[in-house]
Length: 191
Image (cartoon, rainbow, N blue to C red; front, side, top):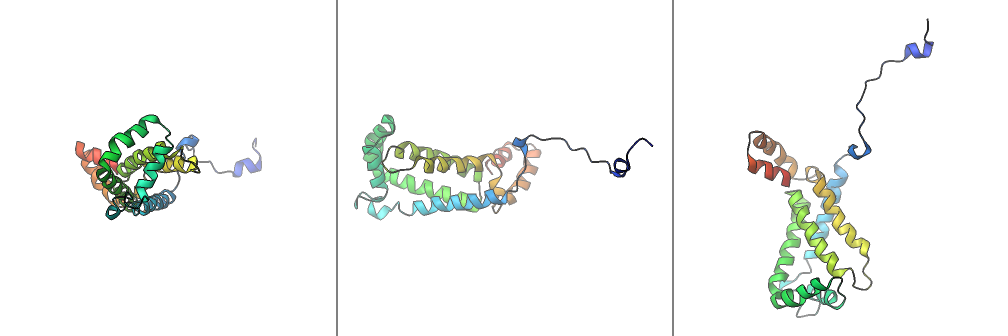
């Protein structure tokens, strides 16, 4: 008898491959909840892009006010030039584009429908807002960092598959992609 009684009573442990801390798995529901709340933020912010007020031009409020702040306190000279020379002369078009884009971001992320595509659009819109607003007095830069980082998380994870329509779209898309459909492969990546 060479082993101790304690050692003899141990049951063999199942060997598990070690995974690095970057590969640790977490439940998706917190990301799903964050995605819905972040989508609601965009939906809510689209509400003050009011076409009947010419997107704030008539009242000196709303989108007009914030674009004027970006022009007055530019972060990047080229961005200011774009606002002055392109956006202001085409104000109504860009007002509609802001309203449609923010509504689209809100809808896709609230529903979890095409979450990765909605996240890509959100990253672009948030980066644009960040570049424009960082030098405006009393704005907190970390707000805009978070505005960019949340959709980055949604893009890199399966956030639309928790509390989202994407969860229902993935299985048939996987089957079609396995059958060789390139369109299904592309759409699969967007959800």
